[in-house]
Image (cartoon, rainbow over all chains, first blue to last red; front, side, top):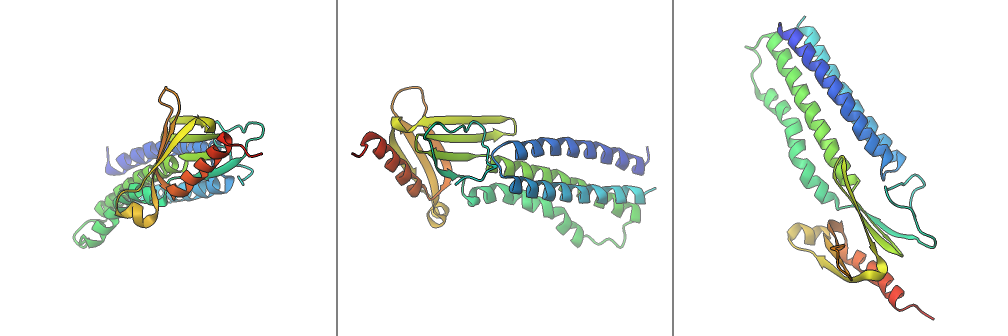
Length: 65
Length: 178
């Protein structure tokens, strides 16, 4: 397996893990004891930063092709 | 006054019950927990900035950046989990009861309720330089009867004020005015 393939597999695994974990956190933020404003701000910052990092990972993996 | 969309788990107000105070732990408690992860978040960037990359191949640099981003993604998830556990830890005082909602883990939640008319003793502990200077501490509420229903909240801001609020309510319950 080439390095690029390995990184794409890793990226896929982390993308799935991030999405599942996001669902769990968003559930907690919107379900329990929070105002919608705080929950929305947390969701935007968390998902925003997460997708930026995933995009960097995608770019780096793609550059190895 | 609580925001309209505030909905802590287990809080259904009884007839004639009003919320007196809603408190979370002091921001310093969150800071102490998050700070190591913040360092860990930026550490690979700092290390990478000092590594001479002139001798490294482009593919190796891309791989290193990939793993730095992976590391930062993991730490990001941890930081938001720590913040979530902090934010969902709430202490609610109403004119009839005290609710200590403790988020131990993402799927481990403990809601403790103490009736105001059973409160016997409220103890405040402020120990250490940070607690003294930043005005936070530990509040312990002991109730009458057995069963271990006493509540304790660590790192509550201005614990003496919270103690006074509870003592004022219990005093009104035990000695109702004319």
